[in-house]
Image 1 (tube, rainbow, N blue to C red):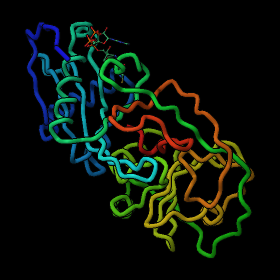
Image 2 (image 1 turned 90 degrees about the vertical axis):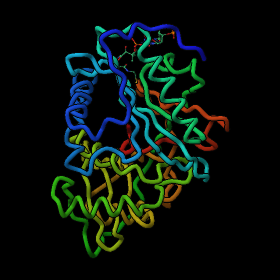
Image 3 (image 1 turned 180 degrees about the vertical axis):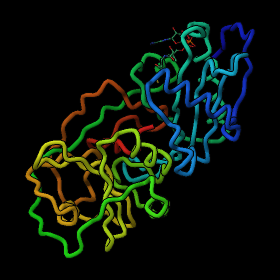
Image 4 (image 1 turned 135 degrees about the vertical axis):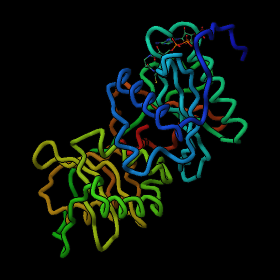
Length: 300
Ligand SMILES: CC(C)(COP(=O)(O)OP(=O)(O)OC[C@H]1O[C@@H](n2cnc3c(N)ncnc32)[C@H](O)[C@@H]1OP(=O)(O)O)[C@@H](O)C(=O)NCCC(=O)NCCS
C-alpha cells in the first residue's frame, strides 16, 4: 500500500515512548480528550502491557497529535493459540485530522506486526470503514443467555477483591499470569494490563476471589436475580453452578459475556448489539466456528 504525501511540519515522529513519563501523560490526555476514558490508573497497576509498541506524532507544544499503539495479544480461537497483535488508542486530535496521520500510523503499526511475525491483528472500532482497506474484517459477537443452573452455597464464600489494594492486586496479577483461557472458542491467553484497567474503567464491575479455586470472577448484578458473568481468571474454570454457589447470590437468569464452553452450562447464543466492532486481519479463517465473544475484561 502506498502512503500519500503528508505535511509533517511541526510534528515529530516517536515510537516506543512509554518509558518517558511526560510522553505517557500526553497519551493519557489524548485518550481523555478523544474518548473520555482515563488510563492513568494503569501506572499503579503494573503499567501498560510490556509488549506495547506505540507509534505517534508529537506536536511542538508537547501534545500528542496522533497515536496508534500495538501490543501482543495471544488469543485462543477455535481451540488454537493465535499469535495475534492488537491495535488500540488510535486517535488524532481534531486540528490534525484529515491529513493522513491515521493512515501513516496504521502503515507503521502494520509493518511492525509483519516484522514481528504476528499471524493476526485485532482491534475494536466504531468505524469499520477506516480499517477495511487494510484487510480487517468485522466478526460479530454473541453472548449467551439462559436460566441459572441449580447451585448450592459454597462452604467458603467468595470475598470481594479491590485491585487498588496492594495485596489484592498481587493476588490478581499472579492469577492473570497463570490463568487458563476462559474459553476454547475465543479468549485471551493473558492480557493482564487490559483486565486490570477494565476493572477501573467500569465502576459496575465486581471482582470476587474464590479461595479454594484460587480464581477471580468478574461479574455484575444490575438487576436483582440477573447475573452478568464477565470473566473467570484461574488455573481451571469452575462450573457456573459452583461460581454462583461461591458468590452466594440468588440468581434466576444469567448472561455470560464469553463463550461458556468450560462452564458446564450452555445458555442460548444472542447477537451482541454494540456500536463497536471487533475486527481481525488474518490470512486464516475469518469466522468463528461457534458463536463467540471476547470477555469485556479483555476490551482494549
Ligand atoms: C478516525 C481518526 C483516527 C482519523 O484520523 P485522520 O488522521 O483524520 O485520518 P486520515 O487523514 O489518516 O485518513 C485515513 C483514511 O481514513 C479515512 N477516514 C477518516 N475518518 C474516517 C471515518 N470516520 N470513517 C471512515 N473512514 C475515515 C480517510 O478518508 C482516509 O481515507 P484514504 O486513505 O482513502 O484517503 C480521527 O478522526 C479520530 O481520532 N477520531 C476520533 C477517535 C476515533 O474514532 N478513533 C478511531 C477509531 S478506533
